Length: 265
Image 1 (cartoon, rainbow, N blue to C red):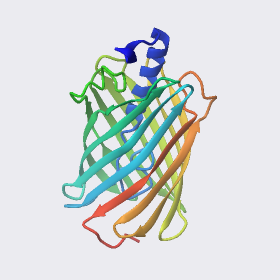
Image 2 (tube, one colour):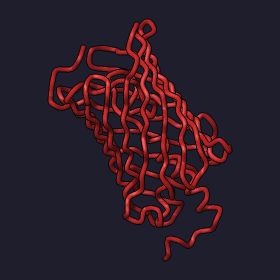
Image 3 (cartoon, helix red, strand yellow):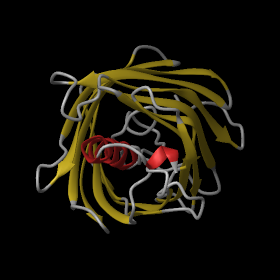
């Protein structure tokens, strides 16, 4: 097929960047500073019987190629006060240089978050997630990784004076690929009851150092009116945008809290 006729080096670079894009986009909603629009998660859960739905446009731009989630759909349900059930997927648009764009479904991402510690202002959770391919030939088109993966991260949150700190570390076991790691930190401050500003440092990579990335982003959450929260984030790699480093990462979307209820103060 025509879309298969690319040189091995470009296909390898393309696959590595797309795998990293799918790997970092395992972000879920929370009540504190972690979660969408950021890649770093925190221990927050929706609350018993509540839904948190995130719908976002997520561009990831690299040197000579791009991957865009148009849109990314992230669905979360609270089972009790400390457990969150999660499903996420996206419709992907991938383009390599001047070649025609390729489209297809991303990997299904299924997760369960458990906040097992919440005392003295410190919250800790574990958030195992599995990513599975769909039978829609996205693997053959080269827009998703060829195998499943299992992510096992821990999330932490702590208030430090006027700012909230959220950080996450995790291990990613990959079928048909190198295992990897992730680490993220979000520092945020509530400017008012409706506006929150944050900064995020996020790093990910593989243990064989074949594809490591570190990004810095700035973002905001704006509570419009129940149940709508505007989500914004923009950032880029800390180093020059080459060798698989992104020149731009972003999230532009909306969070819906259901059933509709007044925002927490």
